[in-house]
Image (cartoon, rainbow, N blue to C red; front, top):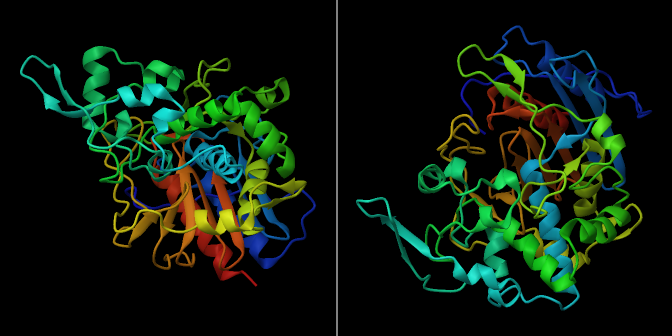
Length: 414
């Protein structure tokens, strides 16, 4: 992934009882370097990372502090705002509905959430700033939502959305309201790939067919069979006590300042695209389920045939490209493995070629806005996650550390 100058970070030795190995020592070094880099623009305040295979966790490590405003050490059970790493869990909830015959991926999504039919395609702005809108040529389907081909975007990756929010007072998605999702489509559904609020709408589809809130569905059908006890849209008091601060990196000096940002804890909408809080060990259990063909530590989550179908390119000839920022305070320009072909599955990026880190072609991956990164390599039976809490996205320090972390895993993988 590109994000300006590349640099490193690291963590303290694992204290979770995992046996030490040359790989663990190397990963500890990478984490520790990340929080002690001489360059403040490359240094991260704290990081937690983990690696798993199908038969269990290989590595957990933590380094640094939860906030630069204090000296509370980062620990492996520190709680993170997961941002877009939420998407794959929402996608799993959608796939469970398909397995049970409750949902047709190719039916109009409006059959489940009628409001989505009201979204129109924007073709520009009139001289007076009025939006030029027309009906879409085809209806949005839930499959399009999983694949990010519905026509939806994000204000930090769309000049059009950014202008709409500035001109009209359209609420931002961070507020977790239904109104925040009523943005126009950027193109006719099914014709392009574009990263946006697709999975928030997909979460509403799940709620419609289940008759329950998305968080309740996840808790019963995903978190329980996986043993994920520290994952929720609304944090428990224990989770709140272990919360990691989201930091903002200054554009010039590279220094880090806590923002105080906490997503709404009694949200109108459980935002399936970004709203979960969790820990790195909890999320590692979710990653491991994909290595195990849908089997969790405490029960089955997906059928093996569903996992196989959901783990391959679903875009056809369409491809994933650069995420061009329209809000530098929230994201830098970002692209994973520039120059290599990338596609999309349900709901992950797929690297079509072997990655420079050693990741196998056809692996699954994605990220979260505050610089969380994960991958799932079903070919080599390995998955991992790197968690920091820094804005803007594609922070050079965090990206550099993550790439070194993943590379070291493959260099030391048995």
